[in-house]
Amino acid sequence: MAAQAVETPKESASAATRTESDRPDLPFYNGLPRRIEPVGWAAILSACVLAVVQLMWLPVPAGVLGAQWIPMLMFPVLPLLALAWAAPGGWTALYRRIRVRDVLAMVGFAALNLAVVTPLALALQPYLGSEANPAIAALTDMSALERVQFFAASIPQLIGEELVTILPMLALMAYLTHLGWKRRPALAIAWVASALLFAALHLPTYGWNVLQCLALIGVARLVLTLAYVVTRNLGVSAGAHIVNDWVTFAAPLLIGGAALVA
Image (cartoon, rainbow, N blue to C red; front, side, top):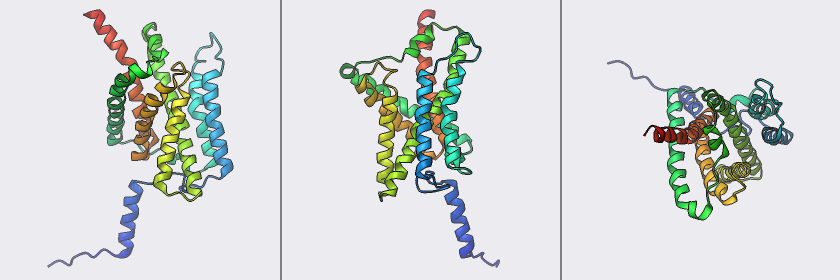
């Protein structure tokens, strides 16, 4: 009879390490994979603010080919540069390799978001009102090429939206755990607070309808952040965000086109 292999403690520890590496914890808040000092967090949060300000108010030169891409590209680049400075050698921990199951997760979380927010919006519309995203109306007047450019330009913008939401969430987690909070309550507080921040950033887009932004945009953000918390991969939450917004923007065009054909 063949001898049965016995797993040594060293091999057992190695296997546990491999299993843990398949699902690492959220980065930075606990000093892993790199500790970010308070000055580093200040730089990251300042870069997030600067990214939002330049996206909303940076004047784009008229008639300059590709000028409209400058604020879109700077939106994710500024926070990433600050993170790379604050956490050299560890800033890429926000992202992991995209696999097939991650693509399925993007679609799944986008579908979950639409399934949660759509009935909620219909139920609350009589009480909250309904300010439409002006981009949806603008799309109807665009040419086919302009629409392609719009959807393409939304990719860096939505990646930027993920960064200016997730990085403040991790910063707040780092602060709360430093004060002695346990991980779960710190994550819960940071998760909700970052959703409120995200909702506030959309106030100008939705006519300063505070209740609509808090109840709908805030809830949508909770679902999208859940994609990051579950997968530990900002690429997944960004992908879910892109799928969600593309469906939201494309649906009126498709419905309007179908109505014309009918």
